[in-house]
Length: 195
Length: 188
Image: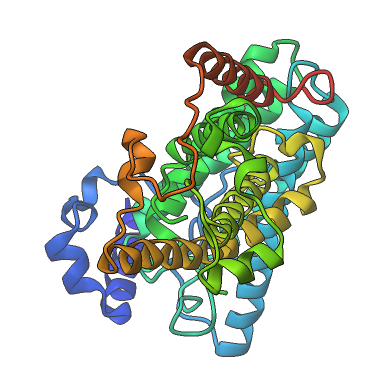
């Protein structure tokens, strides 16, 4: 109970510090959700560098100093590209006669990457700090973003499990679900490509 | 492509490819003015036309260049789209599996830039039609109705046969269906 209060207090402080408090509260559905209706925080939600199975998103920390922020942003950028590469490899390997070794190697990679992604969005790594396609909205809607990211993480695990089974239809269905989680987040929180 | 309607996008590309294939075939077996051999001419004919020495119906030698440019530009765009994939690898073009992931990404980048080439050609094309119209010549009506006032010394158009058109449509349709299936046995 005390931990929930601590998390909620940090959330309020971070939102106020980000300056998105007004637009978050007044205009978005997320801002108007009461504290009690949010999912309970996991014990690891505030632990930096804790790579446990709970996949807690680490977003509610004090903003990083700039050099550390840029390092995280680079890791995030490279990580997202690795996710895309794995997805593309899987998509090519799926078909009437799937190349299962390739699918499985990449599905395992996706589980790993999605887990690492818990640490890619700490406060202070937004577009005001450097070049990134991550929109400021992410830190103005941390619960919604974290929920969408957890959906992505769960979808990678579900797909990985299906890929190791015998049911091709289930595997394709889980892959479609996984694609859906990418889109759900990107549609709202990723900015356009810059050439 | 920022409107996320990738399904419609790919569908449109397939529809355009069907039209391209039809037009290509019709250019061999269609009405006299539609045939490639009737209007595709060399640079000397273009120069003669510019000097005012061309007599004929259908596409003049300069217009022929425009037809070819547009046809080729759109064909290039469709070809690139066939092998492209979107940046997240969620949507693949019908033939993307025949090439590597890197090639598909490159194709997408060019596909995006190439649209501007087509846009320029469209503007030039429309501009030319307007200029002719202002000069008293309606180019588009004869194309649609098949009727025009002929210059002296020209032969009227010989219309194409409807069943030949139907066969061309069927071949175009079948070819695109085959490509959508990944062009077996080459792919899928």
